[in-house]
Length: 135
Image 1 (cartoon, rainbow, N blue to C red):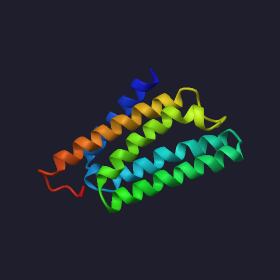
Image 2 (cartoon, rainbow, N blue to C red):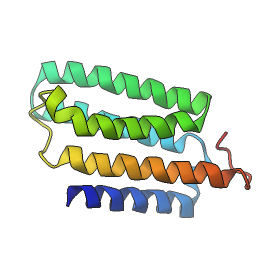
Image 3 (cartoon, rainbow, N blue to C red):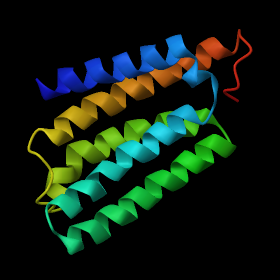
Image 4 (cartoon, rainbow, N blue to C red):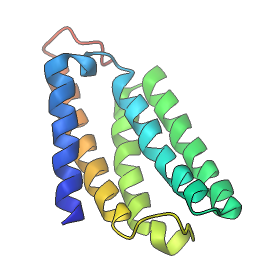
C-alpha cells in the first residue's frame, strides 16, 4: 500500500507543479531531489543516532551533488538520480541501520521517487516542443 501512496503523492505533486507552473523552472526537480534525500537524515535525528546521521549525511551529500549537476548540466541527471534514490530506498533497510526510519518509508519513497523520475522524464520530452527552461 505504501508504494501506491508514494506513487499517488508524486503524481499529485507533479501535476500540481505542472498546473501552477513550478516545473517550468529547471530548479524544481533538483530541489525536490534534495528534499527527498534529506528525510533519511531527519529520521536519524529523530531516532537519536549520530552514527546513522553521519552515514545518511554522506548519502544526502551525494544526492545533493547529483541534483546540482543535473541543474547545471542536464535534467536527465536528475531523472537518473531520482530513480537511483528509489533503488537506494529499496536497499536502505539492508545497508543502513537508522532507528528513526518508519517501516513503511522505504516502499513509500521508492514509489514516490520512481513516479517522480518518470514524470520528469515525460516533462523533459514534452519540453522540447515548448519554451520551458528544462535544458
